[in-house]
Image (cartoon, rainbow, N blue to C red; front, top):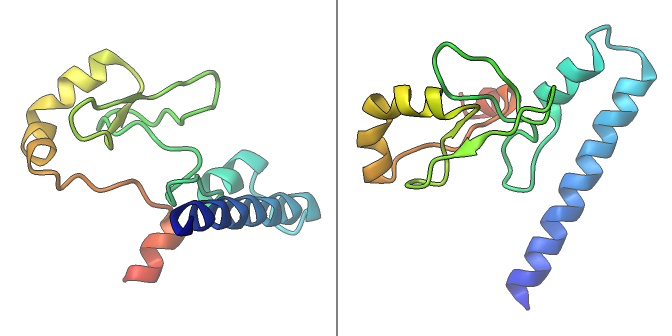
Length: 116
């Protein structure tokens, strides 16, 4: 039950945080576009960004935007790509970290700032 309660509590915290982001966006105090604010601030259930970015070097596609659905690496279950083409091209550099389980989950810029 402890795990179940912790997961439910985490979901509530995520939902509440994302509601605060929505309220902030609606307030109009920030002149960045809604999508920019959401991409920078909304969190997903795993604790990272709600809208992950394709991890290919030459790509900036954002999950859930314009119909983009990211493919998850079947090995590490962490790295994400917007197409098989980018996933295949990234394999050479991703392979060593994938096998060693050192792939990091994407984080928001604000989360990075907290750790620096």
